[in-house]
Length: 143
Image (cartoon, rainbow, N blue to C red; front, side, top):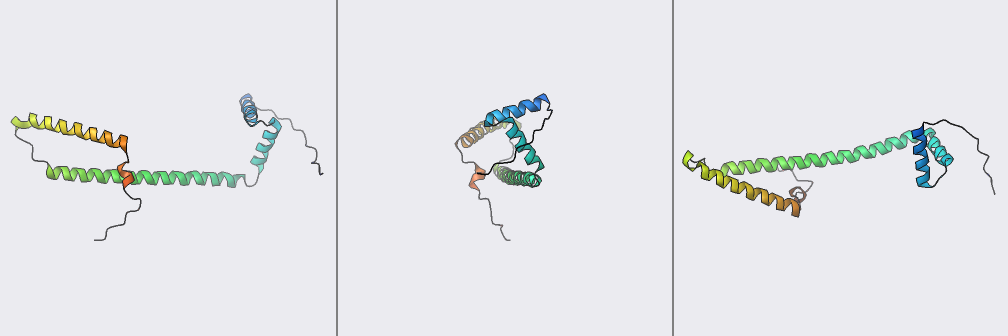
């Protein structure tokens, strides 16, 4: 059986907060302070530590890039939906009535708005969302 060479002793001075964090980490992992400190120093001095950090950062940036792309897509869908609704509304809405009928028109507009808000609430609570009904890759129309 091969025995490992005797380890050298090193005394270090740590800030109290850092020592508390080291102690808590070692306790959570049920490891000795020496073992945790040795692993941390080895990781810090490791030649591939920078590469590991860069790979982790790259994964995080890729995830953020995908999230931003989804948000851009959803925003585009929202804007196009709003534009289509406004175009439709302007096409089918009659001109405003003379002042005598304006109160009735406002009342009817308030009823329609309440119906819209209720329908939106039902849609949001029920799902699926409109953006989920649209495929991710839409073919471009030629013409």
